[in-house]
Each structure stands twice: as C-alpha cells, then as structure tokens.
Length: 354
Image (cartoon, rainbow, N blue to C red; front, side, top):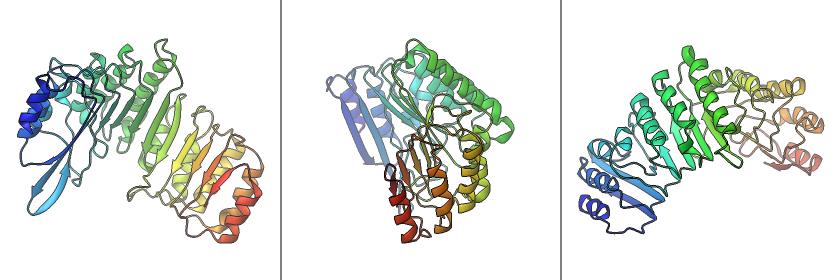
C-alpha cells in the first residue's frame, strides 16, 4: 500500500478522479505511504478519496479511522469515510494543512463522523480551508463534540473565508458541546454562517445540515441560524442513545420556530424515543408561534401511538404549515391501522408515510 501511494504521488495516474481503498494492516506504514503520495500535488483531478483501514487486534476485526503517522504526513485534501467500532477512535487532522500539494477538484470532505475532531483537528482543518487547499469543496461534515472556543473560533473563521465559496452543504454534529459555553461557541458558528450567507462570492441556495441529540438542543436554543435548511436528530441507520420523551419535545419546540430557523425545510427526529406528549408540546408551540416553512417532518421509529391522531388531524387541518409535503411516521408500532388510514385520507395533499 505504501508503494502504491508513492507511485500515485509520482504522477502515476494524473487523470485519476476517484480512489476508494480498503485494506488491513497493523501499524500505519501503508497510510504513511499513501499520505506522502497524496501530498505530492500530482493528483489535481482527484474528486473523491476514501481510505478505510481494518486492524486485527486480539482476534477481533475493528474498522478504524485513518490516523497516526500517516495522517500527519498527508496532503491538503481528501474525503474520509469513517467506519469505526471503537468509541475512542479519533481522526486527527493535523497533517491536512501541511504538505506542498493541493487537490483543487475535491468536493466532499467528511471528518470524524462518529468521533470529535478535537481542538487540534479543528485548527488544522481551518488552516486547510483558509489556505485554499480545497477550493472546490462543496460538502463538509464535521463532528465538534466537546469542542472549546479555541477550536470553534478558527473553524468559524474558515467558514467565512473566500476560499469556501463553493461550499453548499455543511453537516455539523454538536452532540457533547458543554452547556456552560454553548451560547458563545455556537454563536461563533451562527455568525460565520451569516457571513457566508451574505458573501457576494457565494451564489445559489445553500443547504446547511445539523445533526444533534437532546444534549444539543440547549445549544441551538441560544442562537438564531437564519440559513439552516435541514435539522436532524438521531440516525435511522443505527441505534440512538437519545431519549427525547416529553421534555425533549419541549426543548425542540423552543428552537423549531420561524423566529430562530426561518429557512428550515426539513426536520428529522428519528429513533430518539419521542412520545405523544413530546409531539403535543411541539404542536402547541406551533399553534401559538409561527413555525418554519417546513416541507418534510420525519418522526419515524419513535414511541408514538394512535392517541396522537386527533392532535395531528387538528393541527394539519389548521394549515399552520401550508408548505408541508411529507410527514413520515414509519415504524411507530403504537399507531393502529385505523389512525393510519384516517391520516392518509384526511390530507391527500400531504404524503403521509406510515
């Protein structure tokens, strides 16, 4: 693998656009060679790069994120798809801002989907973006769990840089942000998003996504995110340890209003143990305060029952969210067949998924 990386870095495939590698090794010799090759600046056409390393330890197979010596010698840009079985696995981005090369065609960068990038990683990512290392970047996913202001400040500054004018989708995971500094930390991101939104270099509609859990609700409650288009809680593809219940619905109702999220189109809260009471609190809030112009509400795989039907019928009939196109209630085992049919027949203009 090391030899392959050095060959690529030596102009072996100058027209290469996509590279997807998965291998097993102990140590990081292969990663180091690939990193050195990617940092050579000879892959100007590369658009997609995924590196997945599987390590054998104690008789078990564990897929871990790319890290160690290799990442510290890597080039200026890549797409990282992380599949991790280790809760302590962290992607370190220090090497991304070093090296002489550039990947001008790269459009997607996913950093530490399930583990935080840490303060050092945020600073390095900021240097990468602010330095023009990925000028065509369109899609950025970053996990900022527990990130302090030392990490938020440079990252927010990078999002305001003219070098991110191509950015269209930003997924930020706030889970784990300390409540003591929540307002200040996420306020930095809010300010950065506002600058990007008004920047003359940024054209077209931007799609900002945020993945949170209940702990992140207190964070978003503190700020106004005028450009946010998508807000997602939980993950339908894996088990979620979030438990919204009634209180989670109440916290959700405080942020999902037009005043705070005037551009929000999609609200997703899946596998978060949201209950009938939690949805009723949300409906009550939307009845008394203008809701965002939502087009999609996804509440699948929660703890909703048929007892919520009357509340849903009354609210949908009020046309408080006239823009609503899709209401997803799949995999809520407590919703009976009669309630499902009633919801579908009553509002044919809304795609009710049950």
